Image 1 (tube, one colour):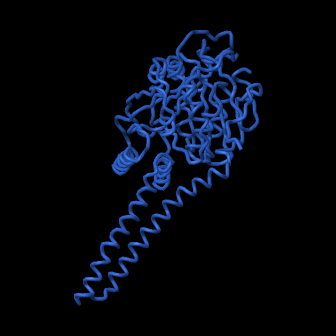
Image 2 (image 1 turned 90 degrees about the horizontal axis):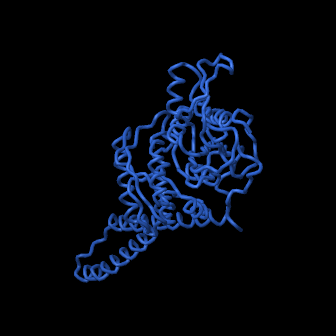
Image 3 (image 1 turned 90 degrees about the vertical axis):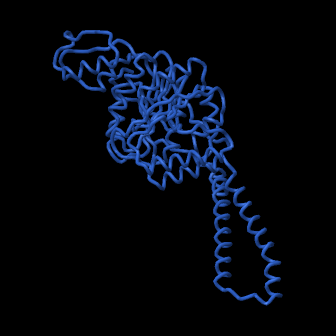
Length: 392
C-alpha cells in the first residue's frame, strides 16, 4: 500500500502492520509545479522540514511522509507509543519532532486515541492516511492513561518500544540517547527528570511527597522522578504485557520485571499546548493505584493501629479502676464521646483500606478487557493477531 492510499481498516484487537524505513525524499520548489520539475534529493527530515517552511511549500506531514518508502519489507527497530486525549494542539508538532529525531531509524508511531472529544481523532486519521508508519488505535471510550498506553504497547512491533506522552513535556529528541543505551546492553531505559518547567509549586511539592512515600512503601526500588517516558527491549516488554492486572502502574511494573536497567537524565519542559488531563482527583487515584499495586503497607498499618488502640485500652483499664477506688472518678461524657469517635474513625479507616484491596480483587475476578478498540488505521490483515488478554 502506498503512503497516500486509503488506510486499511481492520478488526478490533490486532497488531499493526510492519512500517517502512526512512528513505529518499521528494521535494519540489512549488506545490503547483509538475512532477517533472520535482527534484529528488537525499535530505534528513529536519533539513527537509526547514526548506519546506522557508519556501512556503507543503507542510510538516508532507515532509515526514516523504521520508518513508512505499514498500514495507522489514519490521521496525523502534516503536513509539503515544496515548492521546484531546491533544489536537500537539499532534503536528509531536509527529514532526518524532520524525526528525528518528530520521535514521526504521520506526513506527503507534498513536492511541483515548476517547478524545476534540479534533484529535481526525488529525490522527489524516496522519495515518499520509504515512503508513503511523498506526492509529481509536478506543471505544475513555479508558484512562494506563490502559490506553497498554493498548499501544500491545500493538507495538519494534525490537525496542518507547512510551511517550502526547503533551511534549517529555522531549522526543531524547529517544536517540535512549536507543544508544539500549544498544549498549540496557533492556529498560527510563528517563529521569532533573528539572521540571511550567509546574506549580503545589504540583512539585505533592510530586516530591508522592515519590518519597512510594519509595519507602514499595516492595521494589522505584527510581525517583521517573515518569512513563521509558524504553523497553522486546523481552522486557513481553514480560510486562504478560501481566494483565486491571489497576495498572506501568512505572512500577517496568521496574518489577527486572532485566538490565539504565537511567537517562533530562529537563522536562512545560506543556506545549492544551491543558493537563490529570485533575487532583485523578492524581490521587493514580497515587493510590501505585501504592496498592506495590505495597501491603496500608494493610499492615491498619493492623498496627488496631493493636495500638487495644494496647491503650488495656493500659487505661487499671487506671480507671484505681480512679474509682480512690474516689476521684468522674463521669465524663465528652471524653467518652471523643473516645468513641476516635475508635469509630479508626475502624472505618481500616475498613476502607481493606475495601480498597478487596475491590481490586473483585476487578481481577471479573476479567473484563483492559480496553476495547473501536477502529484501527494502517493495520494490515496479514498481520492480524489477537491482543494479549487474560486466559480463563
